[in-house]
Length: 504
Image (cartoon, rainbow, N blue to C red; front, top):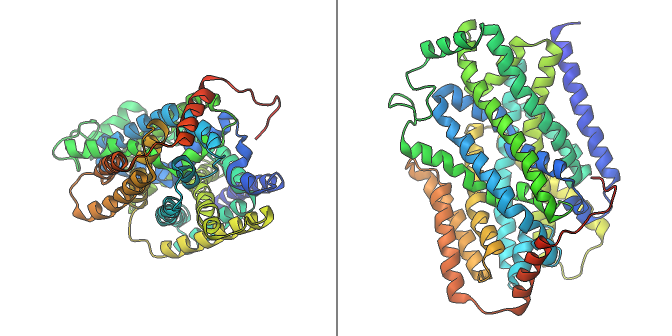
């Protein structure tokens, strides 16, 4: 059997597994809430690993190792900032959002929570939230499609377009039928595959090079002094305090990512956020460390083999293909696909909810039937996927570049509003609208300025200030809102047992 056959068999097994999980989830999806939120019945380990896998996308195994390979350890500040942000998100947002979304009229999407929490009768908040989700997630999903096309180019010397269509098509299928539960369960498998791959590949590379000492020697000979320093040097690209601040600012984005915080809303109870946090952060630390080390080791490995990379973002792909048995390499390549597909599937579900739950239902006078809502949700997944694929046909940015812009958009538009909704009684619908608009607009305005400062940081700060200032001018006491705020605190303080034998 030729090497390529082994690889194709491994990929075939992976694709078949994803479709089977999608079918399993389809059989357990009965109504619209099941399709969008899995019936609020996710165990902590499913929520934790699926949140991590949905978060990381193709940038974990392509974008991050790629920038580390180019610029050195100074780029690891992105990983540090993200890990801190993820921890705070699980600690502060997860339990309170899980409780508050149930207390506030059983909200099943972030936009519906904003509307219910703030009693926005104008519906403008829900509509603007839905539009923000569609705009930035379409770009985000497009980055996943670009990563898929690059994957096939770098792994098989294949055609970018056909690779993108294959991965996009399979992801679309299991998301179309399995909905939120299908995306979450496939995310768990994909998350485990990703972390194993990011351990196996750099370890195998170090062994092939001849050990840690030889690896470090080769890196020193190939790169400028300071390449292995977190602080960098003047000869290292981006080696400034501004670059470090910008990298750390990535962590702020976690508070506003709908495809991540929706996992918090789907937990069985607020109290289970604690164990989910421990599992999720452990997974994240190992994955991030593996990605950073892969980028560093890649420098030494390419030098030892005399390989010149045309695209640094393929460093993990090239190492796996040249180092491992074809079948094992195929599984590693499948893990790269897992990183891409897990994020795309989660984002498709959120886009579907934005179109159906947050836009269609706003303008529909009479409540639609549940079966009709589920069907429309699936059609929304199809439409968004097609648009994202069309945008990705001719990519004009790197995977990391596309992800960073969309990440900033969500972090700035939603992050301050989610935090203020959960922890400040005096937030108003007008304050939330102002903050959301200022956050999203600042991202678009700041990006072309090329100041060197990541657009998320100023946009987050300006949105936070705008929301507070406008709320102070427009606040009116509402007894229902105050009661819900108090009930949420009570729900967090009093554990509510879930049914014995609950399963995802």
